[in-house]
Amino acid sequence: MGPQTYNSFFTVHGIIMIFVIVIPGLPAVFGNFFLPIMIGARDVIFPKLNLLSWYLYVLGILTVLTSLFTFGGAPDTGWTFYAPYSFKTTTNMFPAVLGAFILGFSSILTGLNFITTIHRMRAPGMKFSNMPLFVWSIYGTGWIQLFATPIVGITLMMVIAERFLHIGFFDPALGGDPVLYQHLFWIYSHPAVYIMILPAMGVISEIIPTFARKGIFGYNAIVASTMAIAVVGYFVWAHHMFTSGMSTTAQFTFSLLTFLVAIPSAIKVFNWVATLYKGSIRIEVPLIWALGFMFLFMIGGFTGLFLGSVATDVHVHNTSFVVAHFHYIIFGGMGSAFMAAAHYWLPKMYGRMYNKFWATVGWATFFIGFNVLYFPMFILGYQGMPRRYYDYLGQFHNLNVVSTIGSWILATGLIITIVNLIRGARNGPKAGMNPWEGRTLEWTVPSPPPPENFDVIPDLTSTSTAH
Amino acid sequence: MSEGKAHITNYSTLAMVLGSLLVLTWATVSITSINLGPWSVTAALLIALLKATLVLLYFMHLKFDSKLLKISFTAVIVVFFLVILLTFFDYLFR
Ligand SMILES: [Cu+2]
Image 1 (cartoon, rainbow over the protein chains, first blue to last red):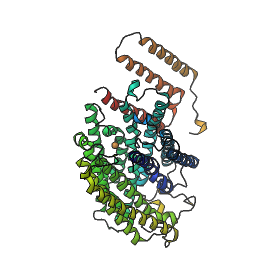
Image 2: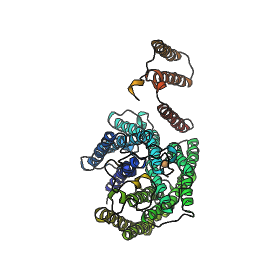
Image 3: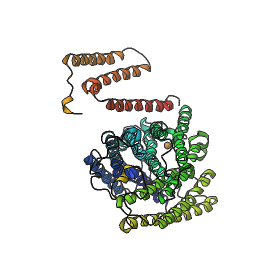
Image 4: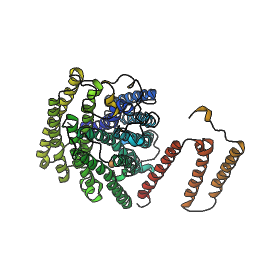
């Protein structure tokens, strides 16, 4: 594989995974299905807007995909489209940037729809103070989508304008500032990480109490930390730019704010563990995935603090350490949470149960493969192996081989898991209405739920359920 | 919001808002003749902010809208302000 191909590979991998898969993943699949049921509504408040959001999503994907096959060749800037290279490269930037822009619109509409639904469609007695935590996490996410996404939209338009009209936003030759691009890009893209991880945390906050057969520990603290992440997460963006030539004042300010945003995440982890403590724990596949989430997320979170402090960041910046950190959070964290959600809710969505033995084997293979794949990258990065280079020095060879073997194990685990889920959804045994003895509203309707969820809108004024 | 609750502002209020906007526009123009150094941009922006607030409150009926809309709108402004502020932690100290 030559350098140009390699550059295109990591760029397209980034664009597709971030904008197409991970950002919409949990909200679009499970949010659309379960948000209305969990608050006792028949559907989201704007079903047609929802459909429009879907069309925009498909259009966005198609636009991104055109960049691969048309003239100029696949983009090679990295998913961050950093200026000044992004308006100078001869590769196919325009469709890729435009596609990300369209996908952003889809995301904004989804966020708007969910926020309005939560405000207007809750069943009688479903108050903000007893709303399921998954719904709360979707709510926080919705606000981030609404506030942050327009900024990346504008920024991407500025790149396009710069490219074709040579205005001088970012081009130093025209009096622009390339670092301004990085500011604008990360003002969205750091909160975007929370668009990815907040719903994941919401899923975990549903699964842990169900299988500990105990109410969640510290409901209010989890809600507060969700909203704190949504707010503070907005003001930490420049921790991606410590080595970009930013002022020292900005460096320590953003480093401090980054350390602050770690606190709410830690509160959540503490509360999940405290929920398990003295619970009557039932080990089932969704719980195993949730525990895997906590383990991988913690490794990702702690290594994030290495990157959040300026001194260590200068050492490991743009090495594979960053790659490992990010994948522990997003793939190990959000990916595990997606699988946890799939194993938790699949019996509800399809009315059938998957094979639990193979599901466990799939998880174990994934978990081993994941660590074998990404953990060596921490070491490699610390030793100084840069990321986004198509070749590496001989001294890094052994750990790279280990990492590659890990990727095969991981892929095997994913294939086992996905095949098992599909087989379960098609011909698994009937799951019944409430296989996990869950206490949220989706477990009070048949599996799969009827088209309008409820014959009669549930009334929760007299009960104290929901969470 | 239901149609029946559409609020009608009386003409004198609207005229007063229009008057203030014109005065503020005059202020924006005339302030350029006074040399305030770097503060002239600040002054112009503050006046613009005041004008935008008037338009939003009266012409766009934000004053008569639900609390939730007011809160979300203010939140956008606050976030925007903080983002600019933090960005200037870089630009002012480079
Ligand atoms: Cu970040």
